[in-house]
Length: 344
Image (tube, rainbow, N blue to C red):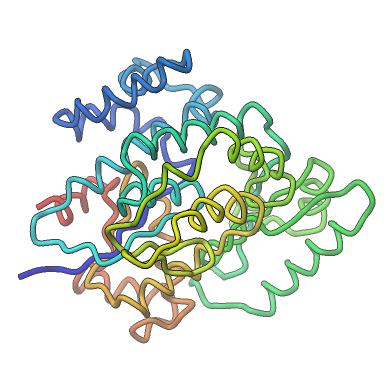
């Protein structure tokens, strides 16, 4: 019996020390695709993805950089998306932030090599410019109960800080029960000073992350458009849900508009991952949501997004866990205990 699935590709921050060797462990048979990626890196005078993945040692200072993290995450995620069990029918694809570039390839809107070129180019540009930074802060409580008032208060504080002379701060990603904020150092520090520490770890800075999805990235978007032509893009083979919740349909996609969104709005405007997941749930009603590796941190944001939409009557974390325990419908391929549920 066929299971329908929405595939969700992760963004930056998902390839960490436990993920070192991910390509070699899970995708030793994908050598031809990885050789192609290594050749693209070699053309740019960059270290091979397979060498990075096969290194003896992981350091945050190196592996959190955009020109290292982005191609590794792309290779791992796309290989995962290509290794799903035969009984799984992918009805739509989406991703979080940089995961949008992976989703483009997983949907067929970019070839694997062209998707790699996009990710490697944008990851390198982000790292070279490194404009601003990011932090994460929750508005939902530990039980994932929606708190729209708290969210509005936090966004009002962001607006207040951003209005101050010399301070830049904006919403970067709407991420389930969390807000990812981005800005310059003064803006980020002002927010950290104005909000209480919660859950022993927030507000949490993200190392080597630029002010993604804000107007501060306009120079990166402009350079990306110069280096990456619209001719790389083609009709997706599967529906593709972007960071606004818009669906790009096979056979009906304006590929120039897709290029324009990818290297325009997607880089300089907020990314609404929550809405992308809720669109996936309501439009496609899949049997399962599959989060490709590496890492498994995105699963929480997917679950929270579904809870915030009261999907299948889930109103909090306990509701989600009860449904998930009864019959797992959220599968994180980066988790050893769940991977076989997607690969068969």
